[in-house]
Length: 252
Ligand code: FPP
Image 1 (spheres, helix red, strand yellow):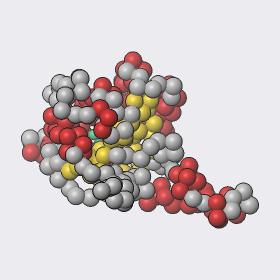
Image 2 (spheres, helix red, strand yellow):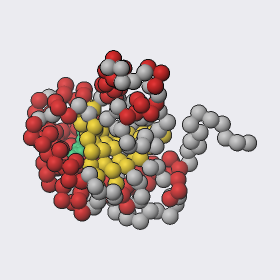
Image 3 (cartoon, protein in one colour):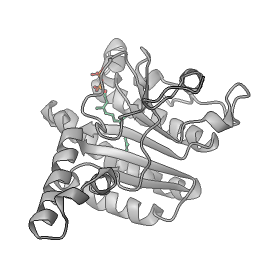
Image 4 (tube, helix red, strand yellow):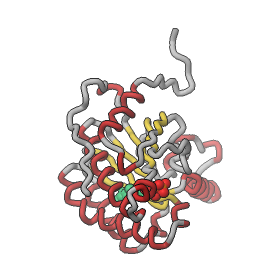
């Protein structure tokens, strides 16, 4: 059951290169429901979800998008059945090991955001290897949010900044948005322009809370394992029709 849902390579002619998002973020929801509808175990949905993510990454790179961030595992996901959590951890590790060579060939720079020290040691080692080996690649910046929570990220930034203030290295008046952003896991990555969430849920679920301030949100009822190039194309057409004012008004 190999998914080949992204047939397109060239940027479709109805998309404007100059209005493409620089950074796309995805909440890959609906894997479990996809599997259940087919009478399969939930893990089959996650497995298929990896194929979709790989295809989306390639598509983003081909269409000139600079960054893709995927929400793979939230701080709340530890509450799932142990077998599912263990399956996901093993899946992440295996995918990283198997795909490293291809990421090098395709010039992908991978990075992880989240509280990584709580992940299994062997997964941490695989993450470190993939991040180090791909750090000089420039084709696309691929960020995987793993054991990630937006509130937790903001709190750890506050703690780090407070520590600097306490040590006399920083004045409270010097704390501005740029200082704050340097303490987020995503330091150095531009904010997402477009958030895509599959499976119809209208929420951001603790994902990139700070960074999502001006993101355009696109929600589709399609379940993640069925997400494909056509659907991504539709999301981008929709995005390009939006009037992004960032709180300002357009000149008359
Ligand atoms: C949400 O669907 C999906 C997840 C919590 C896991 C997503 C992970 C992947 C697709 C693997 C990515 C792999 C790498 C290496 C980045 P759900 O299980 O909540 O679906 P449901 O809402 O239908 O139950």
